Each structure stands twice: as C-alpha cells, then as structure tokens.
Length: 227
Image (cartoon, rainbow, N blue to C red):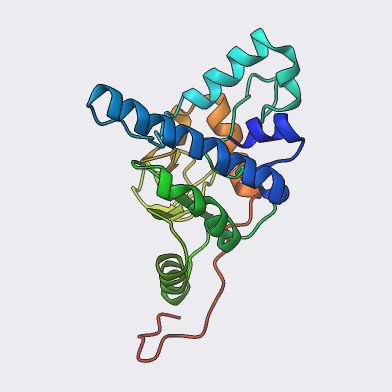
C-alpha cells in the first residue's frame, strides 16, 4: 500500500493527509468489494493481512521486470538484488515517525482488515522498562483501533556456550565465540536471520534505522521497579 499511494500521489503514507486518506479509501474499496462477493456467493470472504514473507520481494522483482519505472518506488538496493515492497498497509520500516504515531496511523486500517492485522514495535537491542511497555499497550488499547501489537526485540544465540544475548552481534559477549546466530521476528514469527532472503535482510537494516524507541514514563502507582 505504501508504494502504491506513493506512485499515485507522489507521497508515502506517513507524508501527509492526502496519501494516508488515499490508502484508507483503497482498503475501504477492497473491504466493500469483499462484502459484495460474500453476499453474492453466500460464502465468507475476508480481507486479511497475510505475513507472506516472500511476497514483498517477489512482487517487487516482478514489477521491476514488467514495469521498469517501479525502480523509483521499490525499497532496498536493486543492484544487490535486495528489493522489496513495504508489507501490507504498514508504514515503511524506517519511516521517520515515532512508535506512537506509527500505531495511531496503521491502526486506522484495522477495522476493515478482518484477519491478521498487526503492528510491530521492532525494539532491536533495547531493553524497554516494564512501565514503558505497560504505558504503550494501555495507550494502544484505549486510544487506537489496533487489533494486535508486538514488542519485537533481537537476540544473538551462541552455539558454543548457549548464552542468549540482546541484539544482533558478531560474537558472544559471554565467551567471545564467533559461532553465533541472530534471531528476530521475520513477520509473524521468530526465525534465524541467516535463513532470510536478501530482501528481508535489507528490510531488517531499515528497521534498525527506524524509530521504535519506547519512552520511559513515570512508574505506575504500586508498580515494582526493576531498574
């Protein structure tokens, strides 16, 4: 959706009211069309936000082959075969918005997406304080239409000492071994980063440039501090 509205009006979803409303209109059209088909065929059809881990890469590559002008809109590095489209109705991974703004915007699509709608907070190597997580989840629940929210950190696992460390690292902080592998959320689940295709690795780098930092609010009354 992000690259579609960028192609249609010259701006991405986060870059103004016009592209964002255009995205909402497109999803609303899809939703209403699906309702018509459900009534026509007496079957349940639903608009779903499917993880489709490889689709964002494949569709970008197909478009580059059939429509060379797509080079202006695909994400990633074309020369290194790392191209991809932003998944579903999400803002691009490195859009210059904070996590609260990202949730507020993306959640407005969720009422019409009947299955799988989700927003990711890619916190990387951060260690968000429990009160920060509580405040974000509470605000999301009461003030937005978000269907699902994930807090998704990154981990490094050592194959020698079996220690698990926060962040994606080249060596183990516990034993200095370089026999390590990274694990983080690809879309709907966690997997080993070394198994990802080049486009997902490019998206991962873009995530790490994004602003997913959780603020540090005052502790809740009666909360147990873990500082």
